[in-house]
Image (cartoon, rainbow, N blue to C red; front, side):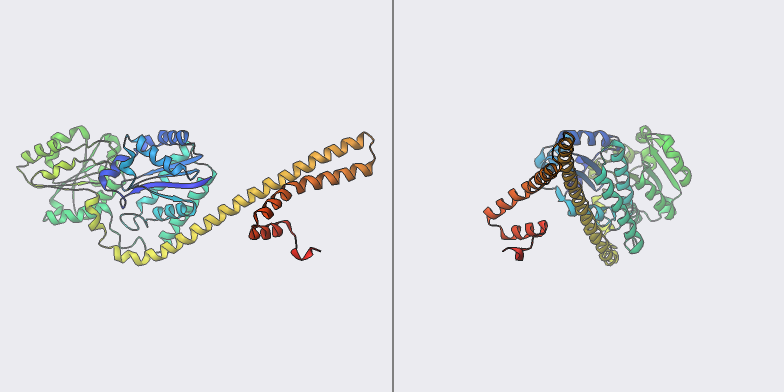
Amino acid sequence: MKLLLLGINHETAPLAVREQVTFSAGAIAPALQQMCDEIGLREALILSTCNRTEMVAVGHPQDLSRLGDWLARYHNLESTLLQDSLYSHLEEDAAKHLMRVTSGLDSMVLGEPQITGQVKAAFAEATAAGTVGATLHRLFQQIFQVAKQVRSDTAIGQHLISTPAAAIKLAKNLFTNLSDCRCLLVGVGDMIELAAKQLLDAGVTQITIANRTKANAISLAERCGGEVIGLEQLPECLERFDLVLSATGASLPIIGKGMVEQALRLRKHAPMFLVDLAVPRDIEPEITTLRDVYLYSLDDLQNIVSENMDLRRSAAGAAEAIVRDAAITYEQGEKSRAGQDLVVRYRKQLEDLKDAELAKAIARAKQGDDIDLVLKTLATQLTQKLAHTPSVGLKSLIIDGDAAAIEQAKTLLGLNQDDTP
């Protein structure tokens, strides 16, 4: 069994493709069970974020293509839609990739810390679903240690501009005084928490939180000094807001073109700035055809978040070295563990053989057979049975003429080529 990884991310596919293969939080557990049952995987984990969907599994190498087919089938897509966007990794490369991802080295925002929490959440979900076994448990414990070391031993997180911060930076270009803006945050997840902090730091005082369940938004609203509305109130309330940032886990857009058109009429076409931080998208992209509306998606923010990239690239070198060494250590540990398992199996085989022959010898001795003959027979039987399999293997190597393999066999069996007469 091998460690497998198949994924799609912001570098291999545009948002229009990525949003079609996301998994909502409630769907991951049953999806994991279905994936394991249909493909025959021993262990599995799904990581689904705004910028990537990755499936990690313990199985056979040929299962990689089955994972791609399953992903397309699960989301009712043609497999050809994804084939050019998918990437795969095996064994040490898979471990190294996951270490880079969890450390923020593979993020749209180099060094961003949110991904570590997202990977931990994915691990917790897979554990709860019963699809994490010994292999993935060992792997992810090491991954989390590496991410912690990268964060503490390098400057990868310095000079960081988050995606919400990039959105606020763009808004400042549109509005003369951001503190006068009325802002709406849709959702209550990590992205919205970050956006709320950025808005407060920018001096914004008029913040409203919209969420499907009002009770879940109260705590954030209290920290922002704002109010809470339900999603069903959006059509009647949207016209009140100059700046809208949305990041929910909805499977369909919650702010449509018609809703925004109505809000613009009521605002007498005062400009609106909308930022869609969700995957799948919360805001219909057709809104960009309307006048006086500025809509930005995650992909649109890429240039902004890349501005400070050079300041972090020097730190990335040290982080990559940590990851590279950790991946090698992981692979060596797995090989050693596999070797230990082989030794245990081999010794058990010998013990079983010894016990069987010894039981026969004891039985003959109890029947009154000559003890010298019993011992001689025991020694002969043990010698013949212990030598049988290695002898067959040696003969095969000799016939094949594989000199290197023959030399390895001599070393393995403790033979000295100089001892031959």
